[in-house]
Length: 355
Image 1: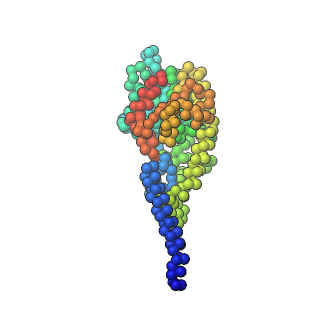
Image 2: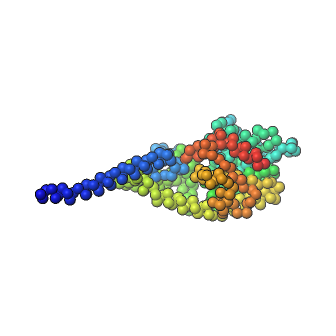
Image 3: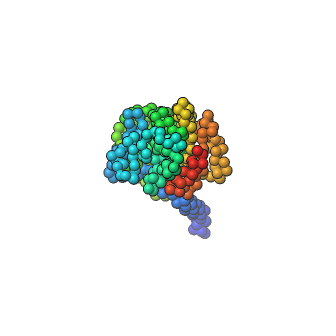
């Protein structure tokens, strides 16, 4: 009788343990399905958009540099292959010489980052700028540089709009990384990134300056690496990955909101607007949305969606902003996120319709 009573007392504990195990197993499997759908590996603390990979031996490249005007440019020696067609100014495409021989031509100055440069267009001259350059009446100057930001865009406008006097100045603004909450001081000759085999590493981050690429690399590795054996074990599970990465995702979300609600990017765009105004160049700002923005509400009315969700960005720029309604099939998956050839062709058609 005593033995039977003991067995009864232990039964609820065993049931609870079994229930906890089943719940854990169900949650783990569900999270792994979500991770697979989002292409987010178990055990990774870095965000899916971060193009960074830990490596054994860090190589530093001199692919881009800051010139004496504080403009980020391509190193012609590094990009010496003919397919890149780097001009004497350090940009991809035709020389930056005003076209005075054809009065019927329309000159376009493109300002932007890696999207405008043509990252992952195959071949490089499949970029939307190159596609528009093939139109017989268009003259296209491509001032797009990977890693550029709105501070660069304004500096490019200061230097090249008065020189080239383009009919249109087109700023290609990517919402994924072009929003700023702090103005960047232009320092001639001082790079803003270390270009390395592990990815592009910041020279400065939140007031901290990295004196070398290796110091920047170690900072990024430390930020997104487990710091104990317990954390390493926990990261073997999807549940553990979600729990340990949650503080990082919340921090990134807070940073994103600060940038989205800041007027800094708008200030730079307004500077370009004033420069264009005194040089008889019409400013067109083409918004490249984040993948997260590509939802049903966005496609209902892309212009209204951006005005509603990014009011600090669009202030005072009515009539100059156009939102390119890309589809997911126009983009490579993160962490790449750039346009594929179909996306470049779509962008070229959209821009052409607005000229």
